[in-house]
Image 1 (spheres, rainbow, N blue to C red):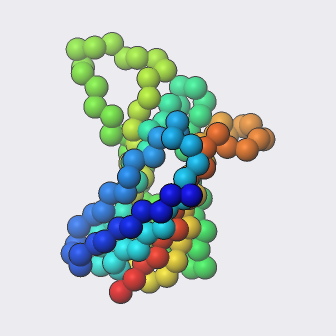
Image 2 (cartoon, rainbow, N blue to C red):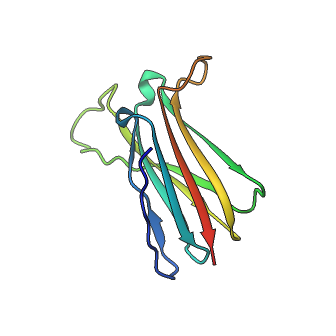
Length: 130
């Protein structure tokens, strides 16, 4: 497990955590963030044309502590080039929170129809503080 220390000043800005890549292997991060932060953004590289994608689970005592607001594709491609089947893409997972507490965010890279362990699992242990 690799720990990452995140120091966040009190502000109404977003915080972007390190990009997830399915080829990097399993990881675990421990982060503390300030309650007045606007949101947490986790970019993740995926290749859905292979059937694999990130499945996100949130484990917390209270569902209002942390929630997944939006998922959007952020890969920019040159419109003059043809679409590349099988090319990876990047998605941003945007989370918001309303109060202090602890949440575990689990990203599992897998094919949803397969009943086997994920190819890669990345866990964020997030503590929201005043």
